[in-house]
Image 1 (cartoon, rainbow, N blue to C red):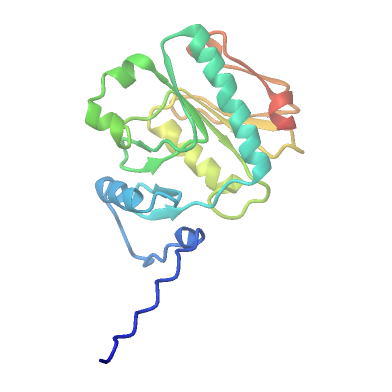
Image 2 (tube, rainbow, N blue to C red; image 1 turned 30 degrees about the vertical axis):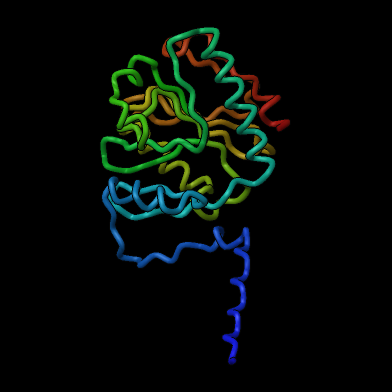
Amino acid sequence: MTSTPTPPAPAPASPFDALAPLRLPPDLRLTPEQCERVCAENREAVLELAADGRLITMTPSGSETSGRNSRLVMRLLLWADQQGGWKVFDSSAGFRLPDGSVLSPDASLLRLERWQALSAEARSGFAPLCPDLVVELASPGDQGPRGVSALRRKMAAYQANGARLGWLLLLPHERAVEVWGPGGEEPRRLDQAVTLDGGAEFPGLSLNLEEIWAG
């Protein structure tokens, strides 16, 4: 009797297979709905969508930047819990802005009443609104989607789409912050800033920058 050879067992999947970069045609344009489907199929990828439909492949934050972002979100959560009436989001939340872009601030605040006004379906996907407060942390250097120039374009997009306040925290050695107000106001740069105040829009919100810079 002739025996049939047993086929070799498939090689185990490498945990790094999911980290393979997406290869995108330069002329590819997606709708927000298509972007959401792509993100659902590529959960390990960090993706955003420009207003013209271009898919933006983000790179992971450096460890120091990620540590600072975690502390920032924690402070926003403490304030929101004490104040009441606010919802806090970290960098994994995507928002579908009125201009059709899908962006993910490093941290953001949204009035609870605006969140509760959304349907369950809208909450489960990219919430179709712009947060009230957006915060971005610049990574070292000015290259790629996490560089200062790219983040300034994001801040301008948040501002144009209804954000009440935006904070762009520049590199720790600069100890500087750009404050983006509502309605097309020119951003203000604060050098050697120690604290940030949320003002009348976010009463009682004060951020100690020394602990953020420390990571």
